[in-house]
Image (tube, rainbow, N blue to C red; front, side, top):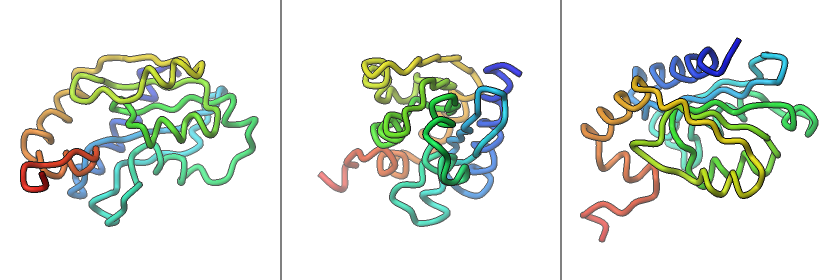
Length: 154
């Protein structure tokens, strides 16, 4: 098993979210032995949630874990993580984050690195194309998801 394999699992989550009418961002939390601890997708639209991003949904799916488990895990996500998801990675001291792309959104990668998290960008064309298509078709929903004001709000 390698990073590309686990990113594909995150992509499956993103595709499922898109098929449900949601934002196509997926994530999986994987232990150092290759065990998938939790998989999730952005469910803000589906659940009417303020905080169900891909990474937080994967953590929720993993359930309560010992700190030692998080400390030996990698978070895989299809998109560069926002500050909220970065905070969750830092809170649980997850030492490694692999992202699919950061062309469409550059999250708090520097904050992660500043706190010793290894950040790997696989620069996946599939992740970038899926996200770009969604943003182009749903700019207001995307802006809401990342906390940006749209033209009607300003």
